[in-house]
Image (cartoon, rainbow, N blue to C red; front, side):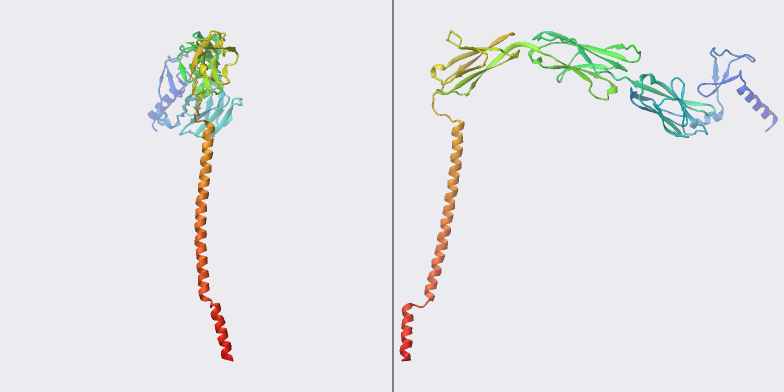
Amino acid sequence: MGAPSALALLLLLACCWAPGGANLSQDGYWQEQDLELGTLAPLDEPISSTVWSSPDMLASQDSQPWTSDETVVAGGTVVLKCQVKDHEDSSLQWSNPAQQTLYFGEKRALRDNRIQLVSSTPHELSISISNVALADEGEYTCSIFTMPVRTAKSLVTVLGIPQKPIITGYKSSLREKDTMTLNCHSSGSKPAAQLTWRKGDQELHGEPTRIQEDSNGKTFTVSSSVTLQVTREDDGADIVCSVNHESLKGADRSTSQHIEVLYTPTAMIRPDPPHPREGQKLSLHCEGRGNPVPQKYLWMKEGSDPPLKTTQESALIFPFLNKSDSGIYGCTAISNMGSYTAYFTLNVNDPSPVPSSSSTYHAIIGGIVAFIVFLLLILLIFLGHYLIRHKGTYLTHEAKGSDDAPDADTAIINAEGGQSGGD
């Protein structure tokens, strides 16, 4: 190396390493300060600077670490991973948003048992933070102490889980056509949650969700209200307020309010049997419905001045029907919410036999007996035919046997002839 080149190199080094002439920036690059020769800038005064780097620095992009942003639910665990391609014989380091070192390589720097080492190699440093709190949110820094120092940022977002909703504003003893307003609120969500209303499977259109910041300055309380006019169909219904938030990951978090609606009764008359005939027993059942249920029933017949019956029981019984019982009957169901009258026209039919369940039963039994008798007859016919065939065969065999045997007279003659020949 010649003298001019050596002189130029010395001047360059002096410029770079002079205490008042250059400074290492937070981004890891050397900065030339705009200061007059022989002066120093105050530490608290902002310094105008121009970033410059040597060709070797620009060529070492492989030494730049990289990370990723993470989102975690409060109370969960987050893993921070920092990687680098060319570590240049240096170790990776993780720091929290307060710039406190958590791990330098595999060495723990901060005594927090929630923070654990996951992996430490020359090319990777991964740590985990368990039981994450809202205070853990912020930018975490991964650094590698090369020349210059290089850093990468990981933004950790902590989601606040909303509390179970609370419904207020319900007043009992609602009457039909009354107007009701229910309020619902849920605290602790971050970011702010949304509230929805429904009645059974029907969505209710409540007011837009209102958002208010909690006292901790990090989470939010959300609220909403819904107003509806109740009907008798709403008696026994459940009004549900649900909170929707990304921290729940689709899980249902809701509260229901069971409502009761008071309304006037209704009634319907049901005959038993459905088609009554003269001489039969008949019961007319007055089926009342309401809230509260009817406590009293009044029976009457058109054309008859005094009521037939006033009772807490809902049935009107005819022990033995007559033609004179025909007519229009009314049943009035009475409760403290009002009354309702139902009508039924009774026509007593002639006492001619009609198909009944007992006759049907007897017909089925008779059919089964007839079928069994038919099977027995078929069996007897086949049995008789079988016996006739076998009896004929037996007689034929007997006849053949008699033809083959010698006749008794012939045997005697032959015997006598033999004897005389002997003589």
